[in-house]
Each structure stands twice: as structure tokens, then as C-alpha cells.
Length: 155
Ligand code: HEC
Ligand code: HEC
Ligand code: HEC
Ligand code: HEC
Image (cartoon, rainbow, N blue to C red; front, side, top):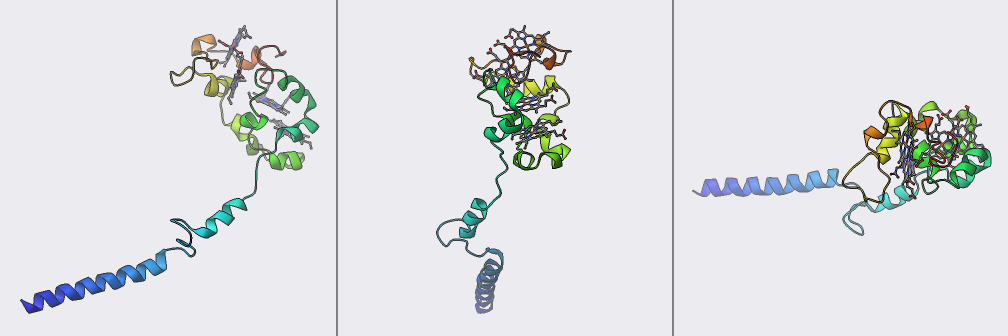
């Protein structure tokens, strides 16, 4: 009987030691200093580079699109919601890589692209303009709608 309980005790203490040894190796530095997270992550996240270019910069070079957009139904949708985050393009237009315009180019057609927002879904408020596929199955939506001014603009 005694032998068994000694073994159990040894196992128990071995477990405790292994736990603390692993913990010392696996828990990253600065974890738990102020809360249940890595304190250093706050600074790291604050230091990330911003990627958003902001409308006023687009305006400097794309005055025509901006002028249409600013009076159309899409004026509350930022350029970059459709075109992708383009800070580096705004700073250095000639060097923009093709896939930086990805948000738009990730879609196969304007039908897919426009319906990604305008597709019918019961989860959207009724006031949100939604069109079923029946509105237009075959044509480019851009044939009739200018994306920068979808109701009044020349397409
Ligand atoms: C400093 C001037 C400048 C700024 C600022 C600028 N652009 Fe451009 N943009 C250009 C030039 C020049 C081209 C043409 C590049 C080419 O054809 O290779 C272009 C091309 C584009 C295109 C067409 C890409 C394609 O598919 O052919 C889009 C879309 C675009 N810009 C969106 C934006 C948006 C959105 C912003 C604001 C975040 C912006 N641009 C800011 C100069 C600028
Ligand atoms: C609702 C989505 C949407 C928004 C918002 C939007 N665009 Fe566009 N934009 C498009 C689409 C779609 C095209 C492609 C049009 C085409 O191929 O005829 C386009 C084309 C362009 C082009 C290329 C034009 C050309 O002749 O090749 C530029 C430049 C551009 N947009 C700039 C802007 C700027 C600047 C803003 C903000 C002021 C903006 N866009 C806002 C959807 C959008
Ligand atoms: C990022 C989401 C988004 C994309 C992509 C988008 N739209 Fe819109 N669109 C909106 C929102 C939001 C409104 C309503 C704006 C408001 O009421 O302030 C709107 C309004 C409209 C309206 C006016 C509807 C009305 O009853 O007033 C038309 C037409 C329209 N969009 C067509 C298009 C077309 C065509 C495309 C593709 C080129 C497109 N939209 C792409 C979000 C989007
Ligand atoms: C043959 C021309 C044509 C094509 C193609 C077309 N539309 Fe329309 N669309 C119209 C007309 C006309 C209206 C009604 C007048 C207006 O609001 O401009 C309209 C209205 C809309 C509205 C407003 C509906 C509402 O109830 O408020 C949206 C959103 C819309 N279209 C999106 C699209 C999308 C997305 C596509 C591509 C899948 C598309 N349209 C293709 C002609 C077209």
C-alpha cells in the first residue's frame, strides 16, 4: 500500500513541475502584466501601417469620378469600399500592383460585384435597395448604371 501512494505522490509532483516548466516556455513575454493578454501587443497593433487612402486624396487625381460620386446615391460608400485599400496607390500611383485593386477585381463580373451588396436578403432592412437576379441576369450592370452615380449618372 505504501509503495502505491508514494508513486502517486511522485507522479503528482512530476506533473506540477512539468506544468510550470512548460508554462515558463510557452507563455509569451509580457502576458498577464496588466490583463489576460500580451501587454506588448497593444503597442504592436498601434504601430501597424495604415492602408486606407481616404477620399480627399483620391479627389486630387480622380476629380471626374469624385464629382459624379459626390452627388450620387453611392456618396456614402467610400471609394475604397469598392476599390480596395489604396493608400500606397494614392502615394505612388504608377507602382500600384494589379492585385491591390482586388476588392473590385475579386469578382468575375459586375453582376456578382453589385449583387454582393444589392442581392436580396431577408436580413437586410427593407429600406436597403435590393434587386433580385431577375432585375438583370445577363447584362453588365454597368451597361445601365454608372457605379459612381448609379441613378442619375451617364453609364
Ligand atoms: C497622385 C495621384 C493619384 C491618387 C492620389 C490616386 N490615384 Fe488612382 N490612379 C492614378 C493614376 C495615374 C492611375 C492610372 C494608373 C495606370 O493606369 O497604371 C490611377 C488608376 C486608378 C484606378 C484604375 C485602376 C484600374 O483598374 O485600371 C482606380 C480604380 C483608382 N486609381 C482609384 C483610386 C482611389 C480609390 C484613390 C484614393 C484612395 C486613388 N485612386 C488615388 C493616380 C492617383
Ligand atoms: C459602388 C462602388 C464604387 C465606388 C463607391 C467607387 N467606385 Fe470607382 N469604379 C467602380 C466600378 C465598378 C468601376 C469600373 C467601371 C467600368 O469598368 O466601367 C470603377 C472605375 C473607377 C475608375 C477607373 C475609371 C476608368 O475609366 O477606367 C476610377 C479612377 C475610379 N473608379 C475612382 C473612384 C473614386 C476616386 C471613387 C471615390 C470618389 C470611386 N471610384 C468610388 C465602383 C466604385
Ligand atoms: C459596398 C456596397 C455596395 C456596392 C458594391 C454597390 N452598391 Fe449600390 N448602393 C449601396 C448602398 C448602401 C446604397 C444606398 C445608399 C443610400 O441610400 O444612402 C446604394 C444605392 C444604389 C442605387 C440607388 C438605389 C435607390 O433606390 O436609390 C443603385 C441604382 C445602385 N446602388 C446600384 C449599384 C450598382 C449598379 C452597383 C455595381 C456597379 C452597386 N450599386 C454596387 C451599396 C453598394
Ligand atoms: C437594362 C438596364 C439595366 C441593367 C442592365 C441593370 N439595371 Fe438596375 N435599374 C435599371 C432601371 C431603369 C432602374 C430604375 C430607375 C433607376 O433607379 O435608375 C434600376 C434600378 C436599380 C436599383 C434600385 C432599385 C430600388 O428598388 O431602389 C438597383 C439597386 C439596381 N437597379 C441595381 C442593379 C444591379 C445590381 C444590376 C446588375 C445585376 C442592374 N441594376 C442592372 C436598369 C438596369
